[in-house]
Amino acid sequence: MDGRYLAFAGIAAVLTITPGADMALVAKNVFTRGAKGSFATILGICSGLFVHATASALGLSAILAKSARAFEIVKWAGAAYLFYLGVMALRRAVKGGAPANLNAREKTAKKREGWWGGYSEGLLTNLLNPKVAIFYLTFLPQFIAPGDPVLRVSLFLSSFHVVMGLVWLSIYSRALHKLNTKLAGGRVRRTIEAATGGLLMALGAKLVFARR
Image (cartoon, rainbow, N blue to C red):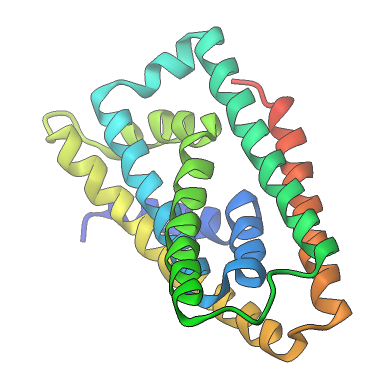
């Protein structure tokens, strides 16, 4: 394999396991949406990476890098969304979750809502992070040789990042799901939910101060 690709894979691996909004969101959804909902969140996050890679190859991410106004709009939207998710997690922790006495139709609808809700949260959280867009814009070109098909190589390289993200976040989600099963209905579980909500709010506040 080309040495450039191995170098990219190594750097992507470090970035993948670095704690951030993605891991906080997956943790939140393990406790609020269950195993399927948290996996849908992971798929949403990884879908966002492909979107960023495509936008970078097409030059769209350059708008964020060069336009202070565009960067600020996306940054504030992303910060507001993280803050919203954090508040909702805190509310759920205080209220103690949904009622258990649901009929079959309500349970099916809740599962469907949990899957699509988890996916959209993962996708939006990733897409509304301008730092990810700028990272792909400045990082990927270093591993694309002159004359290479930019879009194809960008998507190929981002697939390394996506696979690592799927594996790492799935292992992380599975471990938290086991913990969630043991703590179901307990005060400790609600405390963890509240903590993940607070963390998402803190990450939103941190994004407000992000610079290009």
